[in-house]
Image (cartoon, rainbow, N blue to C red; front, side):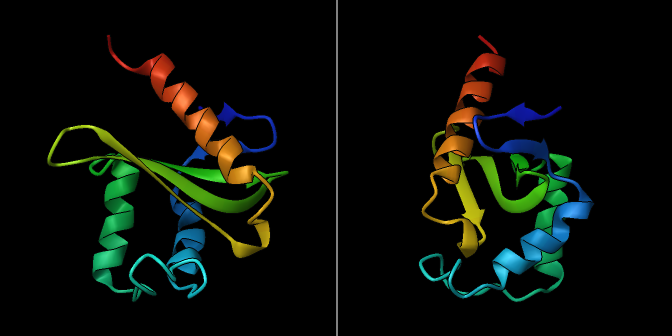
Length: 116
């Protein structure tokens, strides 16, 4: 299943997208306000595996004209059971409104598919 937005497409995360995750996790600019660069260790690989399997939420790869430009995901919070939306984008795609487009599309999808 894909989610089509005005300017981007969201596709379910696959292991082919893992390289993007690792690149974003290791980018100091992307991680500047998120606790710093993440080391690529088994813990990080397990996190990606758990996201892919749905154990920690719903992870989507964001594409612009087929290029992998970012990730967006919904994860349940432990305290309230609500969902937290997070995203990471390659710096070259910042400031273009693409994250806003992806967020709007994912929220619309979540609302349409949520159980009543």
